[in-house]
Amino acid sequence: MPTSDVAQLQKNLISAMKANGDLHDRAVEAAFMAVPRHAFLPEISLEQAYANQSILLKRQSDGSVISTISQPSMIAQMLEQLALRRGLNVLEIGTATGYNAALLTHIVGEGRVTSVEMEADLIERAERNLQRIQMRGAVSIVQGDGAAGYAPRASYDRIISTANVYDIPPAWERQLKPSGVLVTPIWLEALQVSAAFRFEPGGTLYSDHNLPCWFVHLRGADAMPDLSERVGSTSLELTSSQIERIDGGALQSFMSDWSEINYFDRPLTWSMLFAGFIPYMTIHLPLENTMAFYTAPEDIAPYGVSGTGFALIAQGSACFIPLDGRGAAHCFGASDAFLTVQKMLTDWIAAGQPTIDRLRLRLHPRGALTSVSQGRLFPRKNHDLHAWLEPT
Image 1 (cartoon, rainbow, N blue to C red):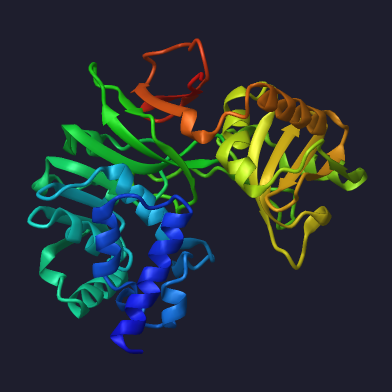
Image 2: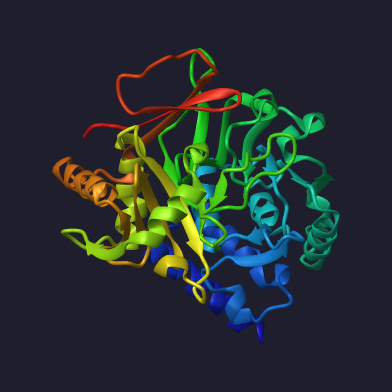
């Protein structure tokens, strides 16, 4: 395809991201125009390379995904969260194709970009891709455990992770400058958000800019714990930070007895769920309930549940809310779970439908807090994660 046609595809992608409110920064826009995304995805068509979608790169032997190239709109938003400028020293966790590192390099100019990747074959691929656009010498790629960062080139002005974490690894805190910014996906109850953490006086990490996202999990020394449980022997899988509270066998038992489709008093669109209602539920859900993210194969649909969505598990009842259900819910057992979600929806609307832009996160040293006056405290390995919605 002629260079002019590639440029048009780049412009179309940028225009779409700007129209959707995902791209504002001129330096980030210039990087998207200067770095050809198709050079990092030579095995797919140009139209696919410039589509606003993520691309699978590698699976483990068990079929689980360990690497992707992220959706361009998500990349743009995270680059803006970093607040980049020329001359900065940046650490990236997760090299993948090298595309994100190339964008970082274009923005920081004479600064430095170091990228850590665990998979040797992905490093080789990234090096070829960077060589293809004559940027190989501008990025230092290191093979290793991303949780350890890379001490020889610290301290860093910015650290960005393209893998979801359960807690911030201590090495990242040590290697980040006091004035630095750390952008990473982090797990809440059954939801990931891309957080932009900065140090506060006293050493806590605080983020007031959090975006819904979905990334592969960090592996290595500070890997995500196993938060998944299958419902009995079926292919319906639940993921939750309180997964130990879910008895898959018991759940299977009452899900096999009785089920029906119920509807909430208003449609729940994908944007409503992620942009506001799910974060609200995460923070305000009564403690006797458990919230989970679910996945099930479309072609099998155990108990009639398929695709992806959120579930609320109560004693003797469950409510599964598909992301594209438009207000429908698969209900099992008693009606308690459905009624709880409906009450949460009513409360969210009464509160003015607060959106995720009011979500605040603060990481305290583990055990420093025993309670909070607003929001919820999530205990993690090294920190206690305090999440709340800032009042209007």
